[in-house]
Length: 143
Image (cartoon, rainbow, N blue to C red; front, top):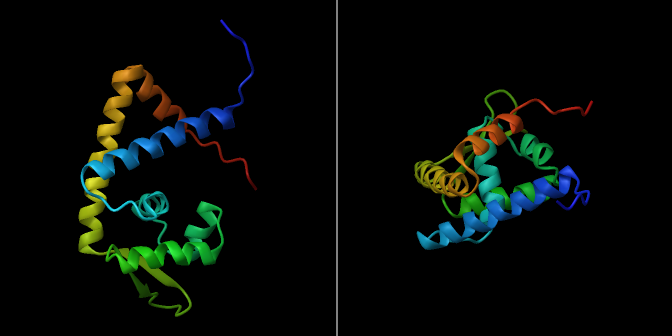
């Protein structure tokens, strides 16, 4: 067996890019417009996990507020999200999925489940479950 050192970051990025390519292929098969789909998909995932302001999205994605506003603007233009004013702070804009956004997000979940099923066929369900369990562990060491 080749004992070439491959670092964890490389392995995670490699698998992430495979997931992105599979997601794009599957989305195109069912007629999704793939314009800015990767960023939109990341934003939708974060919205589903309670990150619902431009500021929080920027910080979590590690991108500028300007880039985040562009991604959100594309989602607003496509009818997937709306921006609402915060009830106590007018400077904060809350990002909410529209009914169309909810419908698209549900399709996205189905699409991702199909991809997970393909991965499970390739590496085995038990290994996929183990991988997900490991990735759910708290790795945050940033202070």
